[in-house]
Image (cartoon, rainbow over all chains, first blue to last red; front, side):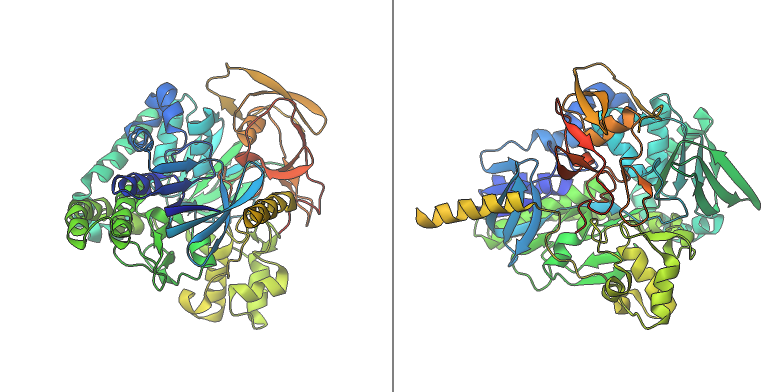
Length: 466
Length: 101
């Protein structure tokens, strides 16, 4: 079994920044990541893509290259292509690398597994040709692939960024179909103070909108009743806007209405979570350093602890690393606090714009509580109507839905239905999201083959006999 | 199945290798993300669901949704978590045995 002072799950901005800070404090760090190269989703392949596609992807993406360049350090072992599938006792991680399972034990564990797209169940969202806006970004960053004949649907600043990047790449989207309303914008004005403190983000958004106007991209707002048409693949997006029904022929539909914390690992080890109304998602409970409630050895940094974006993720990663270095005697509490102060101030500036964004671009109501015929669980093909029916015969929580209809028991393990099932049950039963709860997440977090496990048994017995 | 792709490569140059998908020869960029390269080659769907046989293709591209599951040399894998290698034999997972956990 390998050992380390600190094991970090995820090499996105939070994981990379934490690794560097911890290494500089003298900790032996192992950084595990599923991808072949560091960057996470937001900075996917930034070192390779930055050279050829800088003009398309923009300056904020290229910032990630600094974090990647800072990663090589004698105290950091970066294991790429490593899939973690179980965490035990808040410190032992089982993972697969090159077709063999291995164990790794850290004195501290930092979960930096980032965010997932908020599930956006609308009719037809399972058709080939329907992808998340995040997937379109990954195709562009990692593979230099753009979607032709695409419509973007949903809401949030990421849609503007993706649309602008598509224009720069010479494949402008056919239309931008947005679900936020005029009154959402008005309500958001209450948080304009924060938005002005985070003026950089605001200015970037306005710049992107101007870019889309210049490129002549059609925009619809306050859209509702979104549905993708097609038999074997996406052929059109239907929606209602301005009192009329529209239908735009297209070959790709990019969906997005925000991102939510990826809580699979934290939940699997029993970190308590609570519902956050502003982010409309469950967040793990942790202190200001990112330490998980009730779990002395576990920290959570980055979007996995609450959505704050890449800048905030890197800062929260550094803060967690300082606390861990202090835990392990490498920094005194005074040194930790002195180093943390500027980071905390910067984090507060990064987060200032969030209340404005959360209110200006609320999740699409029609996808929070989809119509009865809409598939909610993509894996087991269970509809919203099925879930409501389970509720009508006494189903109170997501774990019971598994017994009723295998919801959340397919290969994705609830990653793309969990929040919708909570919302549907809470609504149908007249209970809060906290009362309704979420799936119990159990290992393996990712599929592991018997062959991979057998390799683990072989290496363990070798260790014992030696 | 292969159709005209709606996913275009901005830099189509680079070494290509032969892989087979459902009995069809494809020339994909070596070392590229397998799901992305299959999309660019016009492959759709990647699989059919075990429950209803509905067609599916990549959705999240980050290893979370499992809709890009394919069978590579006999083992079910997420195409978006694999890199293209010469001579890969890729098949649609047969309905009903596609890595259901």
